Amino acid sequence: MRKDLMDILACPVCKGPLELRVEKEEGQEVVAGALLCSRCPEEYPIQDSIPNLLPPSLRD
Image 1: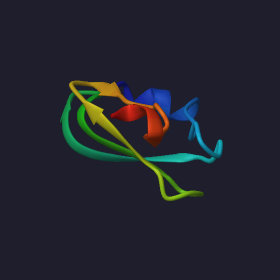
Image 2: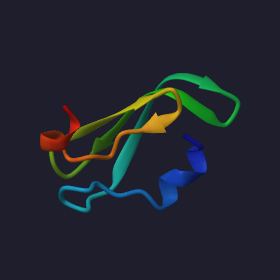
Image 3: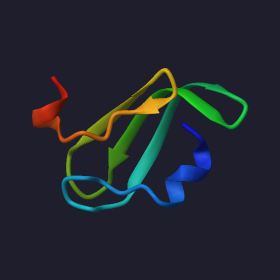
């Protein structure tokens, strides 16, 4: 996921702002980490540079 996408991403559940937690990156690309909602307790994983923004009930 490119870091510049943070300007346009919002929590799919409550539409709140998301914070980026980086575990692994390559240049401007986040390879592993998570997007954390600052308004509700949701966390969205980033794996292989792809953020999973599905609501929690649809992820599994």
